[in-house]
Structures are given as structure tokens and as C-alpha cells.
Length: 289
Image 1 (tube, rainbow, N blue to C red):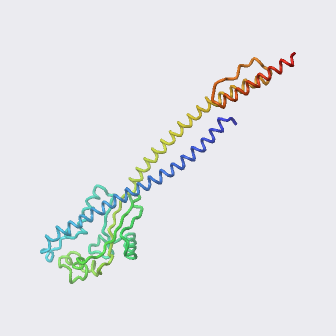
Image 2: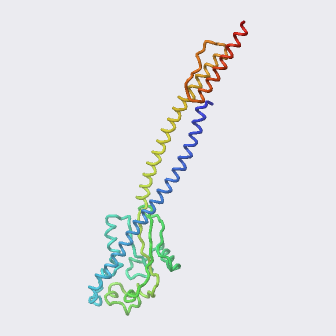
Image 3: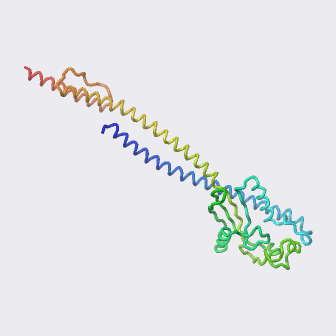
């Protein structure tokens, strides 16, 4: 096996190992960045819902206070306002979801599904928990969800303590079987935002492919340059020296002189061969005389 092939095999092994390590590190970073991006997007949606709830509670609800006994517009409920806002959003972005999921809701549409109930139970088991982040598979692909607990506040008792205390208009709209019996500071549900993960991972995939393509191109260029340098500075001079030495070993004293130029190591080798050639010529002349 020639010297150039051995060097190429060693370089190839090093380049492959370096590409694998760099690729793994790059993908890990890109995936973590994609996850942070999705979590930030979910957090923004959650904060937007909180802003809608606060606006409804502080500016809309006081305007309807005198009419609540005779009529119960659901638009006066902060939870309802936030949910309706995101239902409008889903008309253009169906992969995004927002739900204020509760175990015992007034409006049946807010009842928690099995996986949502599991999240609510996590908040019930750990009163200090403020946020839960996880992943789940949806009909439109993998999604990341962000959940925060819904705990009862003093103003909740007006509509959710006992049916007798609730506005008559609320009973007339939803009945007296659901949404009552909430206890003070009880975890009754969770705000859950679901954001698609596919878009962020697709961006990460594109960045990863671009990085790996660039890395392979750089390695290929380095590989070619190293091969060219090795051939010009080492392999070709050594082959020339070997050819001259082979002719001399067969007694052909008419062979060309060893090259005098080249790298320091090659030049040192040619000087040694020159001295050997002169010694061989002197020995042959002595034998002939």
C-alpha cells in the first residue's frame, strides 16, 4: 500500500470522526434552540391570554355589573374572552390551540380531556408547581404544550360556590349541575397552550443540512489540498529519487543527478544519496583499475 493511500485513509478516518462529532454537537444545539423557540412562542401566547383576561376583568366586567342578574353574557367571563380570541386565531392557524381546561366547568366545552386531566392532577399534587412543559403527538404532528394552573380566587365564589349564590341568568344558560363546589385556592384546571413543533424542527433540519454540507465541502477542499501538497512536496520527489536510485543499483551510472531542490528533509535525503553515488563511482573506478 502506497504512502499516499495510507495518509488518505488516516485523513479520511479523522475527517469522518470530526464530522460525526461536529454533526452531533450541531444537532444538539439546534434542537435545543428550536425547543426554546417553541417554548417562547407558547409563553407569548399564554401571556396574551392573560392580558385578554385582565382586560375583560378590569374594563368589561364592571360595565356589565348591573345587568348580570337579569342577563349573563358569557363575554363577561375572562376565561371565555381568552378562549374566544384564540378560537379566532385557530381559523387561520389550526395547529395552535389554547384551552382553559377544568375538571368541573360551567361550560361543557371546557371539560378536561384525559391528558389534560393528568396535567391538572400534577398541579394538584404539587401546589408549588407554576408551569409544566411537555410534548405530545397531535393530528397535525408533534406539538409542545405549556400549561399553567388555574386556581380559584375570591371573586370566583360568586359563580362557582353554590348554585343558589350564582346569577340566575348563569343558571338559566348552563344549568345548576356543572361548575359549582369550587373551594378557596383550589386547583380546578389549567391553561394549556399547544404550539406545533414541526416548523421549528424543520428550520433546525435546514440549518443542520446547510452546516453539514458546508462542513463536508470544507473537509473535501482540505482533503484535496493536503493530497496535492503531499504529492508535489513528498510523493513525486521520492518517486524521482527512487527511480534514480534503482538505476544506480543496477549499475547504470548514466542516471540523472538526484534533485537538489525540495523540502529540507528531501534535500537532506538527496545529499545522502549523492554522497553514496560518489562513493559508488569511486569504488567502481578502483575495481576497474
